[in-house]
Image (cartoon, rainbow, N blue to C red; front, top):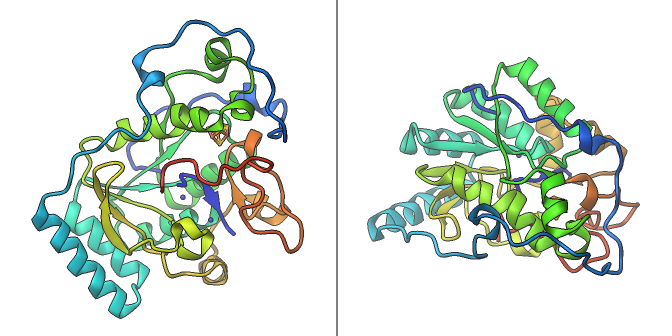
Length: 291
Ligand code: SF4
């Protein structure tokens, strides 16, 4: 997840009601190249959406840091493999290892790997309530195929409440605050008390991800993090999808190598960077989940 869908860049077996999203399917408003003036807004909101950005998480015990470093060295020597990393994380942190799924192609691959090698790993997704209809369709195809029950993790405010409190289209004026409220804070809440999360981060997706270990300590969220696909290329991902007939989001076939919320994602053209369609026209490159 980012909890964000990549391809071209990742559900649980505990069923939770899925939030309605029909209101956001009516239109797709791209990020403008120039910031609009902030309209009058309601007074500051509750703690859920005013939580400080970049708050420190608990540090890992020295012994766990050493264990993770040693285990990462083992995986580095062996080049993974992804199935072993998933199985190790599930076993080492059972029952508190979770899979972050954005329903992008990498995360679809991880759902398949978990189904085969770690079927009790809980799967969750950040439902910003601003996802593409095609993203929900991909979720539903994975549910039908694997029998998973992805847990939706929701922000404190609906898009309508956010607009009343912070003004309309906050993503176009302060996408960092929008991501903080709709992704980072909900993720912090969901991961609190968990011991490890598994993500679809790949090193070649972005310079900011180039140093991602196979397993390590996530300083930002205060738990272990496993990146089983860290060394995979986009070609590796698609080879796995075709070999195992993994369901994936149809937007990947429509010029969207990387998929996030509809207001902040556009298709990319030939030769463009795969992530050029994310927050296009702004300097933002990450949503704050994998920084
Ligand atoms: S990706 Fe865009 S719409 Fe989604 S939470 Fe971030 S800024 Fe808001």
